[in-house]
Length: 307
Image (cartoon, rainbow, N blue to C red; front, side):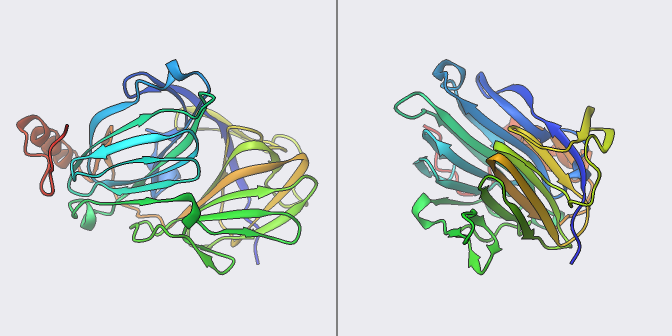
């Protein structure tokens, strides 16, 4: 067994998206090889409705898959396949854009006006860029939760962990997507596939993600995606932790415990031509996609009208 070292930690970047939604960008729109096969991740967390109610009106997607995980509030959604619905607390939406889909997401918040969720973009390999769009909603009650003897809780959103499999299936990146809580003053070793890239995103509390034999303090200073990042002794709220190779990660908590997303995926290792929510392999393919968008031929199948 080998412990994965922490190669970088970084904070989120405040970002304005959609029709004026204030959110925190965890990573994205930089060098995609660092998080391959994942392209972008956003933390949309707010208790001011005026900062999110404008939402994300109709917009195109091609060449990617999106995984949306809601913790608080609701997100009403619709797409060009005719799907309509709402995601509530604990629910997950998985959408394969494939050859092209038009989509909208309108956050509504809970009774107290709070909204919190995450959206992760996973790349599609060249052979699946123009596959048929697919779509799936998963209710919170369908997501298995494992409680260990020491109080550690793991919701298995995607993939398999400790003998349980999450309900979301068929994603090309074959990711593992876990919502993990480790109680205060615990040391936990979690298995990960050694052939996958892995990151953790802390959204409550704080923890140390390293072998106890590693020195304390700031270990590394470098620039990734145009931002200065560090490896620090403790990683707190809104911190991205990128791991090196190995088949386990170590989590050590302080007085408050920690809750984080643990995400792994097999790298695609293909060139990326990217502009907004359209991701292809070459610049020529990207130009062609936007030409189709202007000409009204972007949607290849299943269009049910946008109302």
